Image (cartoon, rainbow, N blue to C red):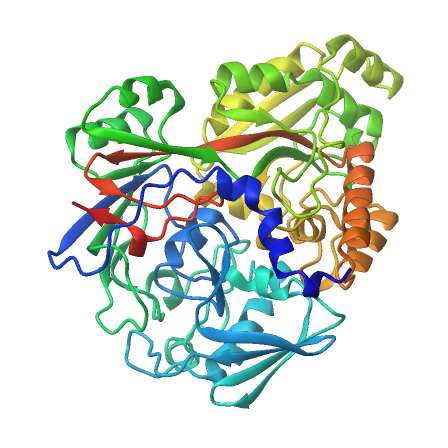
Length: 535
């Protein structure tokens, strides 16, 4: 049965995530008093350019300034944004009717020209959003308020995929020499790094990277704002104890994440409350499987990670259950797949890990020709995921027990992302929440052989399997839901058998709020300030 004839199937696929949504009730509109919301996060949004980095913190923050054609509500259901409706006019042509009387923050009108410019910009050099728009062959303006997106092949989930592809003002970008996105791989900056001109409910007032970013409510916003926040002060506080102390003392109103060790104490605080739910993300390790010799390794002239036995040895040397229990304090679920429950294409039957077995790991290393192990650098962020550095440090200890000497290089994501995106890594930690809540995105971005148009853009170790590529391409235009799921699951199973990456766990989200603050928390960890009320 075709996917397109089943509008409620898409919703049903997300029910496990939506059911876990524990966000507080939104305030009714019409609250008159001006309210400032002070937010502290573990790491900063690295740029104000909405196409420069496909990272949740950045897309979440800039999603308050910019908007897509299609969005999601607090329960992750597709909703109109800058497009009021969309439909298929041919098997591979989506037509979008644009919202009228929308203006950018500088007062210029939003039109089809901006959509054409934004899609091409997101597809272009320097963009990190290419995986979301890779299926688009052409974008055409029919009139000032109608555009068509023609795909290379039928793509029934295109509206799902573009919910984080934000629209940029063509005239503003050209006037500010920001026609191309900031390329994080090259460390480039332009006006779009520090300035912003969107159509969203908040406009950028001040940007001090790494220190503080201030937003003000946009008085001319076209849509409804359910909360009463008129100003947002957003600041990174990397130190866990300092971030918690700021919440408890009332210096900030909302923190993300709550350090796991502090959750029991905060749960007893009358002036603080917690919002928690499973995140739609899987944390994993990846390997360089392309170079003939590893970077920063003791092994000369060889790349141990090209051998599946070595990858399996690393896998079985790591006790994921203990990581979840001890380092994550139970606030996660061990994962055997690269996608989480609730993602379209997920199969519980596949979501099983290889057993923790250091003896088997040593045997595999010996069989592969590394009886004494080897040295390698493990690259990890230390301000991106909950307890990311601690997980990596524990992994270093596990690997040492089987003879692999991993040198941990943990650094802020402002340094980490440019390094790994340039593939200047042999062994790394990352996480992924699939765009569109569909396994095809994870397969295309993380597991498909790196190629043109964004394919394998985040496949940083260049894992490759021709059959997986074939299934990834074949599943995209398939309209029969059962056939499509079968292809997605076969591809995920192939990757699992190859040990292309090591899935570790699906974490829980944890926000800490002052008791007078209400917010909506989503499984993708996007924080929309228009849904926040400060009483």
